[in-house]
Amino acid sequence: MRDVLVIGGNRYFGKRLIARLLEAGNRVTVLNRGSSAPPAGAFHLVADRNDEESLKGALGARTFDVVVDQVCYTPRQAASARRVFAGRTRRYVMTSTVEVYEHQDSTALVREEDVDPLGVNVDLELPWDDPEFLDTHYGEGKRQAEAVLAADPAFPYTAVRVAHVLGGDDDFTGRLSHYADRIRTGEPITVPVVNRPATYLHVEEIADFLAWAVGEDFTGPVNAASHGVLSTEELCEAIAAHLPQGKTVFHAVEAGEVSPFSFTRFYGMDNARAVRLGFRFGNVRRWLPRAVAETLGEGGG
Image (cartoon, rainbow, N blue to C red; front, top):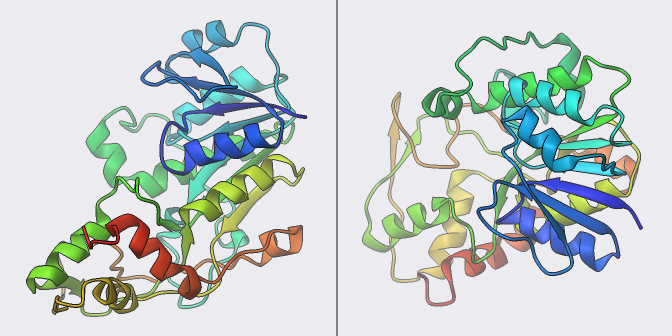
């Protein structure tokens, strides 16, 4: 049994992770701002993770085998977490993102070493508290957060770089619904002229991965992605199969806003490190129809 703290994790794959940790017999504590209570069997701490004194006050003298931070988005948050949890945990697991590779100009699957956190410049003075700035600098925030954690060799951390997640009837992003609405009505789907594919994960798979990672002892960045890549066209084919009365129409543009999961650069991650460490991924084409059915509902909603 491990003593695990999960910061955030109230919805989507976070709540699935908590359920898996509890089912495995771990002692689980969930820390959030009090917006929702954790499931039965988990302890609850209330604090604002952006307020360091609030965080330390909520934790008291408690220590943990593993901390899973689901809501670390900026280098400021990472710096605060490193100060607070130094000496409190044997391992800190941060959920990061494929977006850390947004500046890599590659048509090959990117590997962890393609973005070395030790080589990333950190700027704590950027307006990280501005929601609009953070939204447009999501990948940079995660990249710099990783860099802050990596800067202290005495702080054992893992950064799980998560591919784009699909599936579940509680997908709150609305991205698949965006496509379904347009396919249903025949409205054009805007894509870049050069539209690159990407890697994906099923929502249950990332919950499995994080639960597995809690029980391991590796550190540093690790890519989490199913085998195989999908293009926007393949994704739409799976949705159209769920909406047989619909029509898929693409509109290619040189610049400007495009539909979700349409990329001018290749967002494909190499998952070889995770596989070597012992995790078994599924194949994206095998689970995609299930993910579409779960999210849109059997009635195509």
